[in-house]
Amino acid sequence: MNQLQHEALLLEAAAEIEHGLQDADIEWTWNPRQKGGRDEPDLQGRADGNIVISAEATASPIPKGYIDSRIRDTLKKLSAFPGKRFYCVRTPQMQQRAETKIVKAGYDIEVLLLSHNTG
Image (cartoon, rainbow, N blue to C red; front, side):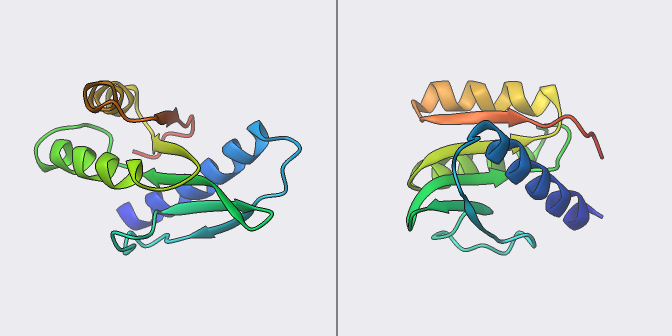
C-alpha cells in the first residue's frame, strides 16, 4: 500500500510544483517505486534540457523510529541534486521534522506539504 501512496504523492507533487511555475514547460521523469539509486531523485523536472526541479517524497505519516533517520539520509541525497529541491510530505508532523533537519544541515530544500492525506 505504501508504494501506491508514494506514487500518488509524486503525481500530486509534480502537478503542484508545475502549477507554481506557470510559464515553464516541464518534462518530468520519475522513479515511482522507490527504487531510485543514489544518483536519481524520485522526481525530476527539466526545462530546455536543464534540470530545474529535483524532488523526493515520503508517504510516511509520522517521523518515528527508522523513518527519522531515513528523512536525514533522503535530505542529504536530495541536497546534492541540481535545480530547485523539494521534499514532499503528507502530514504537518513530517513537514516540521524535515524543516528542522533542513535548517540544522543548512540545506536549500523546500518542504512541500500536500493536502490529500492518504495515510
